[in-house]
Length: 397
Ligand SMILES: [Zn+2]
Image (cartoon, protein in one colour):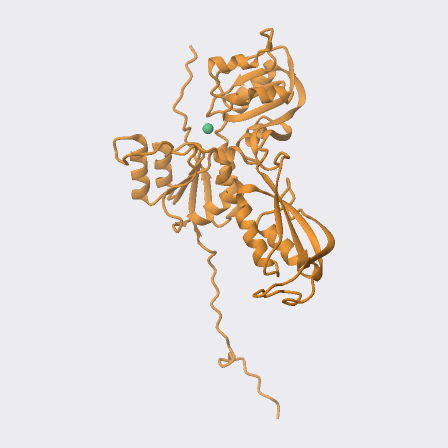
């Protein structure tokens, strides 16, 4: 007899699988962790106040607003757009607050944020110090090429050397990379290994991976493996090493190394596509940074091509810009006396020193933060503020 084909569902063998069509809801903590991976709070200046300033790590986030500064109009915009989180460059809470009341600008904004359930994160000098951070965004805005740090961080890099049995090498290598060791410029998992022989003798109470307690001295084929890492992730890297390494006692050395960091520093330096007269460069700065008036020291007829920049208040780096051979240095907040740093011993300009304004050299940070967060979290809607947050106007009669 021909077997009857049933089109009815085989209920007994049918496994019901619950499929979620909703992506994982992001939290403030997820966003903080992503920023920490890019611009670690450990590279912020000691006087700074970065990270989560208002709110809770567990708060769910669907919409984010980015801005250079928090001002009441940005709070309005966040409420109107249903944002759960604001990320600013400048920290709204900077000096210790004694009260949070409606009597101060900061207090009244913080109260409104809490009432509206909006968290606030600041990414300030940590973002200044990060490759691809504020000064790199300014350099890009001015069309600079071959951009590197003006003053790379030095003395914050360590070298970790460990000794790994050959059979465990891949596991240890991957664990160290996963913990963040071995990042050089645009490469991760950088390390070097060379094979040799390690020896040891387990004593009473030991639980050796190889060799016998009170036996002969044991020899093991090992790889001497070395990686570099920033000093602030050392404890995390050692924890990862000990977890991945098969030995009960893990041998390792830590050295300080002096080479400049490829990932962290201050300011940026690059070159214009072609040499121009300073007057034309100032016109470019005015146009790209939307500056109505520029204060500067320099000879407008002099050609410029190598350009140093630092978003915000960067006048302390003028000497470094001169040492690096920059023809011009663009930053903000240059005081009268700091303009003299641009002069040589005869009083002639050694560099064109250009004050384009604090806001004007940093406003692109709102888009930098937006683009970074959006690239990491496609399920979150990120917009940068439409508010000009600088309270300063320039009067041109
Ligand atoms: Zn600033």
